[in-house]
Amino acid sequence: MKKVGFAVLALSLLAGPAAAASQSWYYTKITYYSDATKTVVVGRITDLCNGETTTMGIVTPYYNIDTGSCP
Image 1 (cartoon, rainbow, N blue to C red):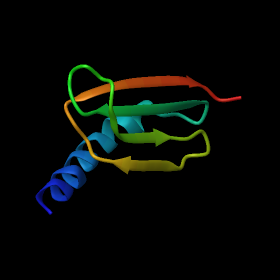
Image 2 (image 1 turned 135 degrees about the vertical axis):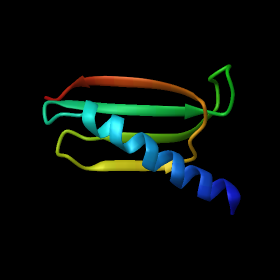
Image 3 (image 1 turned 30 degrees about the vertical axis):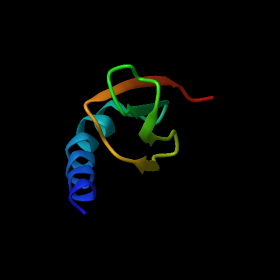
Image 4 (image 1 turned 180 degrees about the vertical axis):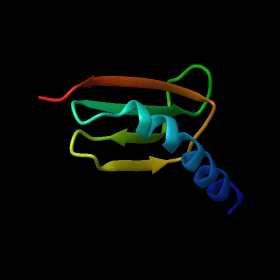
């Protein structure tokens, strides 16, 4: 239960910057990894072009941020 609470808190803290970076003509994807090797994905937040946000898994200190143009 403690991990879920941490994940929810971390997601809420990151939602502000991720949402601010996301615009209607861009998508933003933050992929979280289990450790610094960044080989095992444990979570993901995606801000879609239509304004929706999808979340999966847990938030860790090891992540990559990808952005791109919408079609």
